[in-house]
Image 1 (cartoon, rainbow, N blue to C red):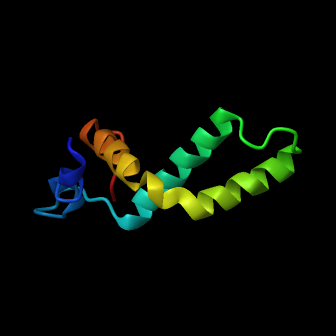
Image 2 (cartoon, rainbow, N blue to C red; image 1 turned 60 degrees about the horizontal axis):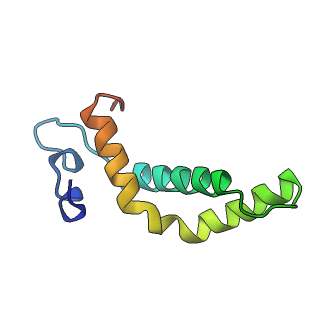
Image 3 (tube, rainbow, N blue to C red; image 1 turned 120 degrees about the horizontal axis):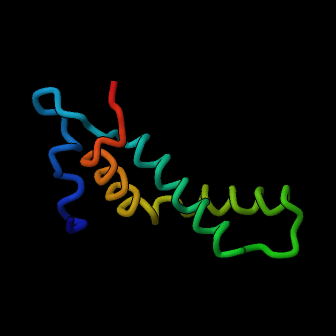
Length: 87
């Protein structure tokens, strides 16, 4: 799905009881994606696990907005596949 269609996708809107995604879900997914990516790439070698986790947390806090489009696509894919259960 093209990025310009993500926020207008029907699953983002709540028409007729259709599932919807909120900004909190998108932010949480963006943070999780970025955290996993930083861990996988091995940033901050030589630090203790605690220090490394603190540095990753700082970067995630600063840069999670860069992952919003990827997070939205990920959540849409999960919704379309029935992987997210809405209340």
